[in-house]
Length: 301
Image 1 (cartoon, rainbow, N blue to C red):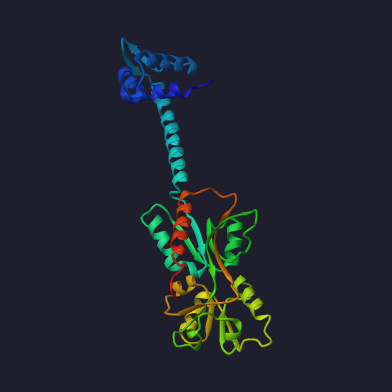
Image 2 (image 1 turned 90 degrees about the horizontal axis):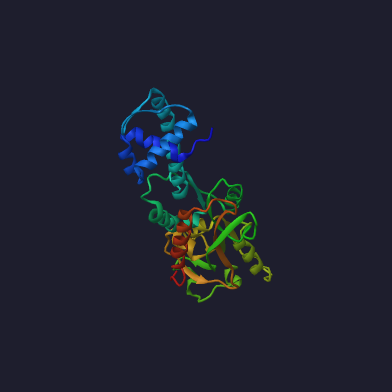
């Protein structure tokens, strides 16, 4: 037995409309076409579905029972259509995001507010983690989108990444710090002071270690923490932070920033699993992040 969707469609419209004429109008076909589809269906199922009295069709008990099954079929098709729309619009599906601290405020907060702030149908899980953890979680598809600092595994075949922003590190300090009067700060200038810097595994720290490798004397003292924390410590007078302007703005501290030489690049990436579903909303978030971060170029510190 091979049922054709068009036959079932005609049967359903006749049952719902109560006449061949109304069913033909609903289907945008002729009345003879509907009648032919009904006769073909009866031949296929080998049952009489309607008692005919001239142009009038009266459903048989078999037709009533068959209609129940057809309705279940159409309900299932409607559910499939809704599911397809949800997948297309990423509705009613949990978005899993993660970011390093420096990008949360005001950048990612603003991007999320603008792109999906009004979407009540879009549950979100948002974690703040270190870059290494985010790389691992995105690679294993536990996060849909991650915002990280540094080059990391940017060339990995398992990850798709977009460079959000890249700038040179600066020396950040209070306005009354002795180094605030310099136009450019070098490793030699920093020797008498405590240096506030990112952790040992960060690209910024590696660049700073290389910058100091040519000096006979090590810095007087160091404090290792996140770039955001380094900004807060610098504002409290703990020392000079080697960070970037993104971290300074995120910290919301009034710090004096001076170019640091030799140059150390501070890049940020948006990363996704290479085989993950392309979700337009995530592209919109990334684009908005790039726009917001681009404003940092040339900002006074």
